[in-house]
Length: 144
Image (tube, rainbow, N blue to C red; front, side, top):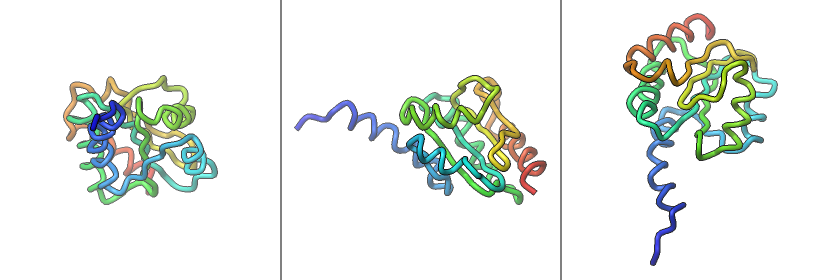
């Protein structure tokens, strides 16, 4: 029995997906799912652009996990996976203007509008604790 490259990649990527979905974050895997979640959105939403890169594993995903321990949290939690669910990621990024595509990245939206954004360069070289503190500050400001 031969193992396809796609099957191998899915086995490799799934733990990276699970790291966020275990936290109660909903994966948006198609442009239609993104539109359904974002259009007419009420309240606040955290949107994580997941990635296979080392800074996603070492900094971004752990920061998101830590930030969700905050007393004040977004109403909705979503993730798209850059490089994997390409169309869904492209659709989500349309809502993140004026920021250029960046992965990993973390967006906070309120009533469907972007109010806070952490780009890759703000993740690289910083600890998960520092990023979580930034997210908690944004949650405390926008999610009350």
